[in-house]
Image 1 (cartoon, rainbow, N blue to C red):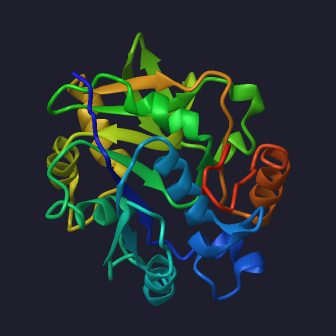
Image 2: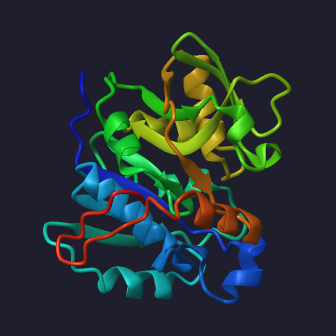
Length: 255
């Protein structure tokens, strides 16, 4: 069945220490790319794909993220910010779990620092998703991925993901940080939690073992994980010609 969702969860809790030479004390989601904060690119790209409600999980400088969110006045959008006070000591799976009480339907899961083209999100939202499953957008253009060593790797068999993790010895695609999820992701993360902690990959690994995690290849589309000054500079180049906005309509051709 189609997800037909209008909800997105954006993870924006990390302190972005590797980007500190650029961000200083600013939270990474508010670092600018092409004149807009990273998180605004993500939000507008998802909006152009049809998302109307956003739940943002903040952590480092949550006050600044809340202030930014309060200043966004895009017609028809609802933006809620919740806080993960454990962002310093726990992995990103805990940030996802902070939203389990406010999202009860299929949702788009995005990272505040993963820049993508709106059509990629729209194509992901068109993918069928069964109850209890999730779909991960992956990139099989391995030779074109900037800093493959730092990327989360994926090993597929047909349309299913067999393994996911940064240290996989064998892989055939990279995790783009874009997921189409059902609420089953929350229960998978709860099952994967050990000593009060889990990563998003831990939960997805459980779904993969149960053949409940499918891959959607983004094909020729562009994306970039912005973690360092080098990846920020690369994103500036990659999206230099594509990131255009119309100040009146707020329609953007790329985020």
